[in-house]
View 1 (cartoon, rainbow, N blue to C red):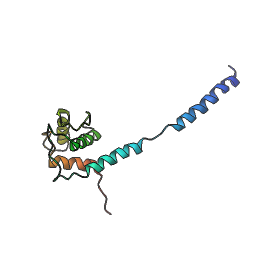
View 2: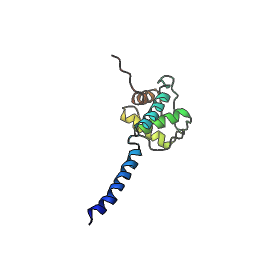
View 3: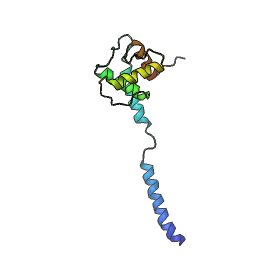
View 4: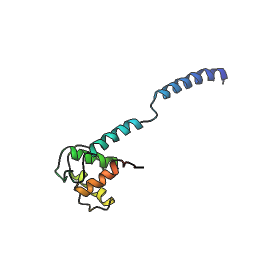
Length: 126
């Protein structure tokens, strides 16, 4: 084939591709970090003493926060809907057993403490 013809096709295509790829975001880390910061902020308001006891049938923001935390940790695959159903209970029980807590599927003081230690970053003191 004619080299001049090939160059006339490939060069513009390469430039257009490069410009297009340059406009794409290469990292989605800030958006993920923002979502994690939101979860950390909401989660830090719970203490193991004052946190609500959650069991099947519970509803509300605390349930959403637990579902989001379990989803972030890879234990929950369902919708974050604020309804403590069988999926949430199963995910909590699996999380509890993985942290050597009795796997009863209910979120009490020990489970809140374990969730917080995995979600809220520890501050270093020098």
